[in-house]
Length: 365
Ligand code: SF4
Ligand code: SF4
View (cartoon, protein in one colour):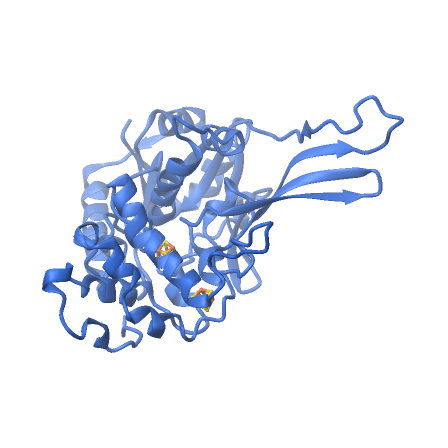
């Protein structure tokens, strides 16, 4: 069972047949946004979105997450003892994840699930989740996944990939978790050759629609200090208002802050998303702030994604090309253009005199 046909008219039935075995999550339209939420009624799922504004990262790293709770009541035996907040880690299936977001989860594993450190909340959420992806048939003009090792039907990180062929989905079963999901479904119809060929043609057409490209292959060769000291950061950072939108919409940004919130004699230890674009992000207890200037913070974000990560992991850039930061930055700062500026910084002995004079404009696509 590697390829399965699911008629669209029976898709809700297919999802209903999973509910005895899985908690279902999926994209649901809420006002002018589509968000991933727990599904109570399977007809709520809306797979017509181009891409969600926020990535599905929050299913594994919530924007705000209660980790522990505690009591400050001296009359209680457990006063001042941190107790982990109970959470449901029973099997969960997330429907409709875009391939770029699934690739981003693999990328975030290098931070949350390593030999040195295993973040228990992240690891348990990942282990309990089966990811059912949805290939992109109409990529956004800001998507550049094919420049960073991905693609609109990339299978990396997914357990199942759905291809929308019009009247039916072709479901590619990619992992053991994916097989278990279809074992739980009540009825299965193997895909016929005609459907497989139709899906293949759709995939090829979608890849050709991604016209936005940037070369990320040479970033590892570039001189870190030359990039760090490049003049173009003056131009790049100028319009930034430090809103943090780029980091909040980004599926590969993983920074967080942990704070205790106390109400009377009870409290919670909460993990919240943080952003390297915020002035307080690196403020030391001494009052010293190594990234006090906006230029330093903007440079850090791009250097981390396009240079430091590249050099440390030798596994490409820390960006999956989803294009969200390009789309939602209120002042049109564009990571593709920053990458082009970085590419123009040659090693010192070959550095052009005016590498920074490349026009700082948003690309047409
Ligand atoms: S979204 Fe744009 S303006 Fe806001 S912090 Fe990011 S780069 Fe700066
Ligand atoms: S840096 Fe921008 S394009 Fe890259 S993954 Fe993050 S939001 Fe998407």
